[in-house]
Length: 272
Image (cartoon, rainbow, N blue to C red; front, top):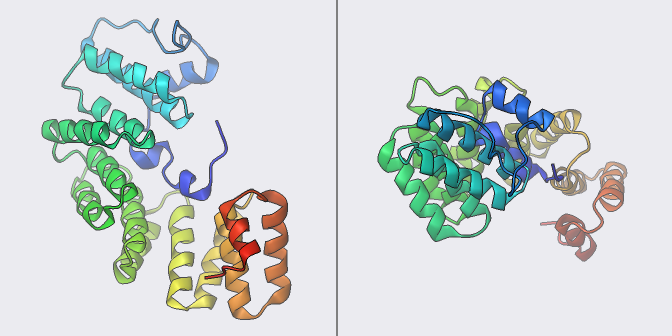
């Protein structure tokens, strides 16, 4: 899988509601039955259309996460052909189209998924993230909150993290703080993303000591540190007047990510 930034890591498979079943994951890990004329799972047997749709949707999700969009779309086409009412396939295909900047197609797929399952938490979470990524941050919050209404939603911390991230992007610092703190309370994995967003939020509020605490937590959990985290560290320590720590973060940013947008901002002296 290609390396991704912290922003990319935020919306990994489970965060997007794309957690797959163990049998298909095992086949994917071993390479079993995943090669065909297009590289997809053409040889996976199933006489049940719904099960066939599920399997190919899970494969499509994995190829999407691996960055192979063409094969992901191929798998999702097979899934929808097998069972046109399998709304999860439309939801995942919406994410794929969104990543390809095919926004009209993405919107159509999400709308189709929502028409079949308007209260499904994963569909709402995925559509909310699509809206957030396409400049509709404030509209996205309603879909994250709708996802949280389901008592069967297994990862509510993900929706709270998404809501907090998008509220922060929209400039709603109070709302973002509430969502992100709730995400931390519910997190089962330490809440790396929520902690990073809180570090950013407190930096923006001018609460630099609080920001430093959350960033320190993030750096303990992240190896290697992302360009975003290092750049925040540079600016934070600069504000706190700690030149030694600022230089340390800057040196890591230069050595690890010399071509990153963050390092280019550093070279230009754009600390705010």
